[in-house]
Image 1 (cartoon, one colour):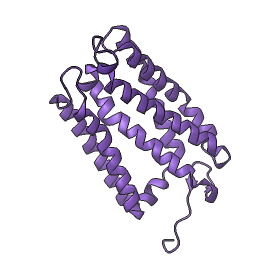
Image 2 (image 1 turned 180 degrees about the vertical axis):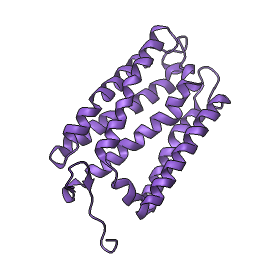
Image 3 (image 1 turned 90 degrees about the vertical axis):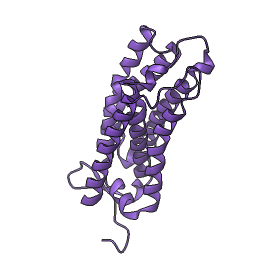
Image 4 (image 1 turned 180 degrees about the horizontal axis):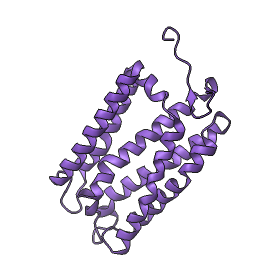
Length: 214
């Protein structure tokens, strides 16, 4: 497991550096009212790579499923900084319809993440926990869709170009796909809860190892 932990940490660090450097080089900046293809690829590619790795590597899958769902859910608390969208919308740096939806959506998920982690992350609350994770996914997908379609929804209004350059491009190219991956992991873990049990410490869930790997 330690090799996957080190490898995952290294890949996260490399991804973070790449997201910042590519944004600094204006890789994701595109012409007004045109589809943000490069930005879209920056969101989809890491999620696709994670899903392929998760599906094809039993060792990596076992490592991912052994992570604490409470900790992964608590990470979503950082989305409380969604108030930044509201500020940018107020100053007309971002379209109001995008800023309000993305901002309040992130604030709602960030504010309820501790509750979801401490109260819902248990087999007894499995459905509620999965529902909350899907709400978090919906918030992110909705924000991505509104940002990508801003030029079509209001061709003569304020563009979402601010999301393609630093510092906001970091949210789109790193934070959003990472949060989506964490949601996916938590849902995958919750689907296995009927065959899991609390560890003696009660701090995390332990998933029985597949036969032949114990």
